[in-house]
Length: 464
Image 1 (cartoon, rainbow, N blue to C red):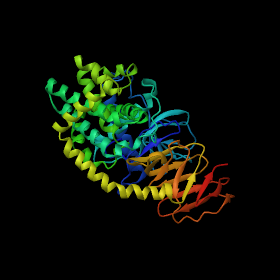
Image 2 (cartoon, rainbow, N blue to C red):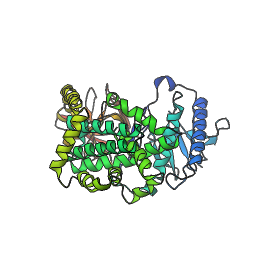
Image 3 (spheres, helix red, strand yellow):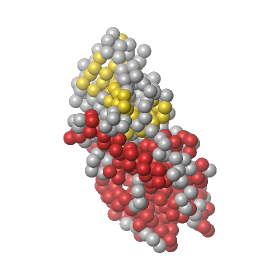
Image 4 (cartoon, rainbow, N blue to C red):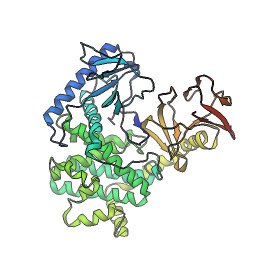
């Protein structure tokens, strides 16, 4: 996710990536301008990747191909060999109509028999370095399966609410602060102390995290964090400084840390590991796919203690005492006070969401598979009920689609999408023709054959 990123694509296999919002004033740009901007941005990104020559990961990224996804057209950087697409001489890209059911997001996308890096268009004009980082980020997602074999990270798994609660947010903010210090100093001794503090605060958070949550954080630090690191590392010099500047402001600009955290922690650990282990440090990830364990392994005599703590093992009483002392010295009391105050104000929002998606009447969609885009900065966990995802979009190839700017709930088992019934006029029975509902909170289209039936005060919608 770029700092101007807004949506994340989640497929049925729970792989993920991100996409930026389309500013309203740019959505009406002429298609020719959008195509030229995309073609120019790809050429800039290729030039940066060619300079790397495959050194960072052992594979070349400048040979990969991108898709630019507009409102109704797709733009390819090579011939997709599909009917309806032709090469545009002005931009150098292949243009054609968007196939039905295409979900637009920044992600690795399998389309027309090939794997591409998809980016949402139009690209912004005010941050060319950020655009290059975005294109490289998505290119890395294309090759990630061959570089790192990662387990699934359930977006709505048990304990995902931790980073919305005071305890989890406090320790994460302290970890970010320590990482910012480590990135900004030149003294190896000072950097080492800051790295120890970051790992200490991470391990302390793991003490109160569920096993699922610890797994989710580790995997997202790799899947999204390493894509972000690669983009910032290869888009030009000074990526670590840009990241440090972002970390200094991120606590006050992100309302939700639940899904936004890896775009901060992942690249921070990546830059620090590069400083300690050298430019080929990424080769170690195949054997040790855990950024915090890799950094702990550089701590010499203290190595084993930190490795144990990160595994929630060893002398956890000593971990609590050490982390509490370090937190106090790092301004932890004021951070905790701010988070407790935020949490008190948060209760009204959580109660509203529970009334909409849990206790009130809902429309429960049960598709065969889910492929979603949503805003990672607006993700809210409702515990065992699931997670509300803002700016959620769902589509399938049969013509079903949902747009829920104010959010929809995804259940923990990923079998259901829940909408507040709102002012929707729903009739029981099997749809004989496609139907569309437009409410104040969402728009839903279901094709013929879907079954709508009552359950209590709500409804269940199932595909044929």
